[in-house]
Image 1 (cartoon, rainbow, N blue to C red):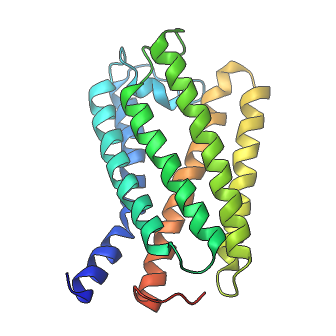
Image 2 (image 1 turned 180 degrees about the vertical axis):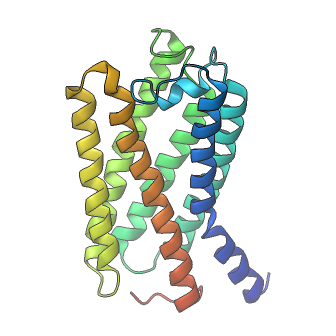
Length: 219
């Protein structure tokens, strides 16, 4: 593969984070349409893809497409920035990959058995996957915050990472202190933060490639 084709492929992949986000929000919007009575303020997003959910088919398809685009973007992000800028960002990119893989495989194989939490093995594994995703997401954002703040030209991504971290912590606190009828709202603070943050990284990667090409190691 010549360098021009390689650059074109990487440039396209750099936008997959945004495309993934579009499909994620589509799975929520259309899922709600197919799930009569769904309450986004109180219900988890995972209720839309629960095995007994009336929106399972359409929401699961869109969620799967989101996962595919997201995985390709995150792996592309890791491979492209491995050895570039600084070691902290490279390591953070690797953790980012682990988080995305756990999320994609975990939620694909272990959707909720039904809306809410029924306590089945399926539900227990779903919660386990969620905890793992949250932990790796927090580690990723902390590493990106540190790594980007070390740079000369990309400190603003470090600041955005800190803001994302604050939103994640805020969402986690609200999940534990708000009454159950607002669980969905608190959860969405966390989930939407990750989706939007990934989209920002996607835009930044595309801009980085357009400005620096595919070989530069200069921060």
